[in-house]
Length: 239
Ligand code: IPE
Ligand code: IPE
Ligand code: MG
Image 1 (tube, rainbow, N blue to C red):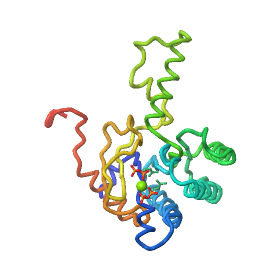
Image 2 (image 1 turned 45 degrees about the horizontal axis):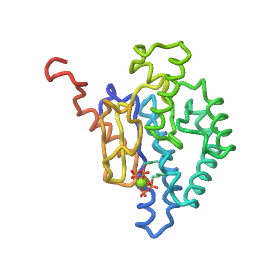
Image 3 (image 1 turned 90 degrees about the vertical axis):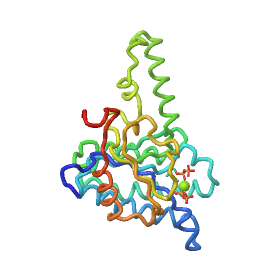
């Protein structure tokens, strides 16, 4: 692996927890629990590689439609995770950022999120961004609403609505776009994740469930990324 072209931002669709558990005759909740342990390991591995930002899809806006007990289990896991790992994040120099719609989240989780973001706000080693109750179409719609309000109030003219202005209204404002997206579980779709931000990201789809993902898998995804030729629409040989 080349040390010089480590992706600055890696985004993850951590998929396959349920199927991993089912394959072992375990309840889905055990898959989520194991998935949370893997998340911890991957954050450590990314930090050691020198990645600046890692974004993790933890819970989508569509995941609210899952059975009540699974949603409740996931909220409990999230609550425990935010409490138990905050100190470690902070001492590792990690800035935590949570993206998504907070309105449907339990009040105490919203407080934990605010507290975690506040406490780690000045950390500079790495940013860990957790997408919770996140949907990209909803994110873009909210950005459109915010811009429409500015136009209505006369502080913005329609012709000034540029890609940059839209970017500034997204949950990810200030965070550079992902260089690399990794999705586990064998599914090769985006599932309403970072639709705007992934415009030119390289994508690696892995035929493995998230609970089986290891730091070695992270390393090989980075090596795969380093073999890619990012052209951004510029014809071969002119870049
Ligand atoms: C990913 O695993 C975690 C969440 C979406 C919360 P899944 O729960 O989607 O597991 P599969 O894809 O059904 O196996
Ligand atoms: C995407 O996985 C969401 C997360 C990993 C949190 P899903 O399991 O919800 O996506 P689909 O249903 O396979 O598209
Ligand atoms: Mg899934």
